Length: 281
Image (cartoon, rainbow, N blue to C red; front, side, top):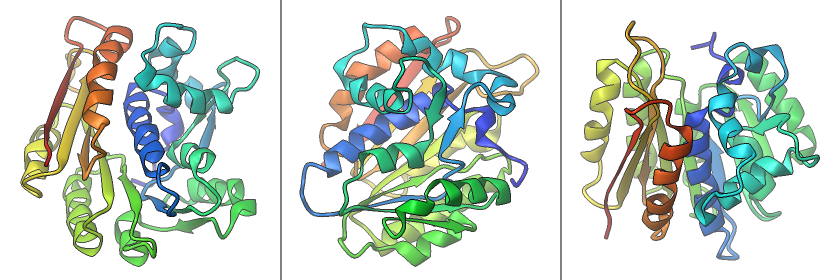
């Protein structure tokens, strides 16, 4: 919805899970010299100042990246992700949090390309200004990312990763995300697709993973992190999940190591847990 601002949630537990996986997949694609594209349907504002009012309102980063920041016991599977956050905070303090687009631009090589969509007028303006000096390597389009996928797939190199990451404040986003994914996979069957979804007390959210499993019999992975019990009033985010199509062969091992640690560090009560399931060839 146009009222949504990711700055409220920057660096929370959902971002930790999403970005840890994203960093791993980008590293995987970089192992070959051939260029690839990173496509983000809901790119937000790229980077977020954690001392500004938007982020401070609920301070969700405090129970996300904030819990990881000062620790020294993270597993190797999370080291790359934390390095990308540290790159935006060179003095060692936690002042800024990189969004998905910022992480991608930090990691991608000169031959790689970023195609970013953002519908919110303020966020898209900030995003365009942030990457103004990076064109044509980075192109920002103010518009609906669901529809925008059609204009950028398949990439010329036939290698790429697509992040589909709407807010789901509008319950129609579940159906739109699934439909956009189906269309994208028909256009670019070999791409890596990462679809994020919230774990909330809403029927659409609860049914979403099973719906996604039916899209492709093989080559998918589902990971979900629950950090606390659902709220008594039925509102709020108590976890999140990622559905990855055509994941890297080593992603299951990375998550097998990372997820117990994330449950331990980010868990807020006895309901903290994770799901990791896949069908791979």
